[in-house]
Image (cartoon, rainbow, N blue to C red; front, side, top):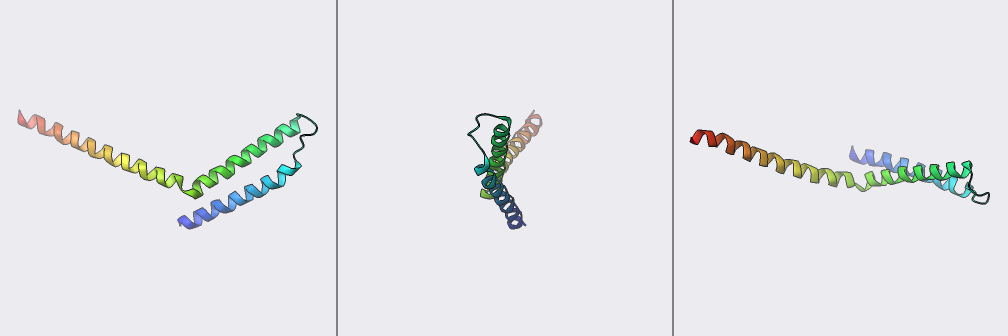
Length: 94
């Protein structure tokens, strides 16, 4: 299932990259700053963000981060269980 999911992200990234490569040569800087140029630049920035987000998922940074977060959660749970067991032992001693 994970491989199919990554394949989908690869396809979307390639489509976004193709759209960006199609649009970049058509941006004209010769007329100076204008609304058309501004729109083109903003559109290209959004395309770069889409490509970067898909690359982030494909590389698997989220999986590594999730594993680290799971390890921290497990450690916190063990710590809380240790405190809880100590608190339940203290009233029994008195």
